[in-house]
Length: 388
Image (cartoon, rainbow, N blue to C red; front, side, top):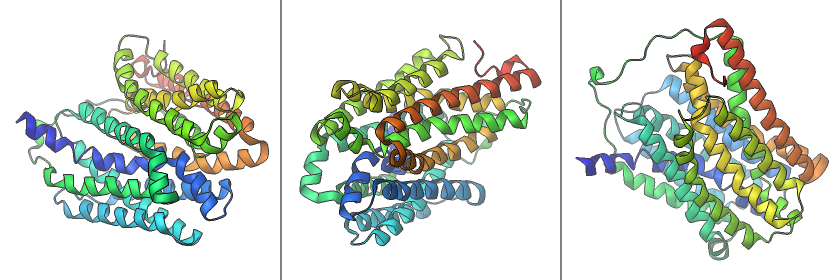
């Protein structure tokens, strides 16, 4: 039985990783595609934003209008289209065809995330599955970054998308273990009624949770060019990214250790300060060593923040609707990041981009704090999102 439970978690983790992986390996493909298609970094950053916007749009529409859990066919078809779109992006001869391929991939990935999230809600221990999904994303990132130089030599600039296609093939194969949701609703825990926080608190908090993803994506998309400014060769950057991917495995563990052991606002403070410091190190220092520290810290602190950001949204509304909307805002922040980063880069270079990341991280912490204070004053201290 334990083995069956373990196997059933694979198709709920690998496709989830596929949905997020394009943004994770973005530093490699943004630079390579700009060179291949003779485009500016800002233009390719816009294409990356378009893809992530398609993920968010498809995820919202699928969650609102479709329930495809009764059969494997819809998600299997989406994964097949994802594989074809990634192969097309890898070999696209024109920028227009490349853009179309990334938009199609984004739409399919959004549908996949929505389907997987619905199915995950049916299991007995969703928190454990969330950890498994994070592990799948980090593990795939480690495999890619550790082999990026070899893959680029063998497959050329389209190597990141061929890797995504390979993950898609594995995801498709894993569907043989995908189980139908349980029909017995009595076995599922019922949500306790809880007062809804004021609308202004919800708006401020949703904006706040989207911003750390905007910070990471705005810097992540132009990491290769930032490494050149710091004097770090591409091969060394790939090594740093592989080390960082390994370090990211510790982020969910750290979140779990902090949860319940420190004041409720402390993890948010630690995470956002770490995020701001990492952004500064990427563009505010000339030393390759400090740059590497920033590169490792940026995703680490973003992953560290994840459970606490979701916890902040859950406290606003016991029905879970606000937390469900948070997923779309996560993707919205990722989608907005490359475009804003490209605009800032074109005006002030890597230093301006680093300070942009610092300011946005501080703003996010401020918005969450204000949203928490307004919620506490209107509903009560049980919604103490950031109360110390």
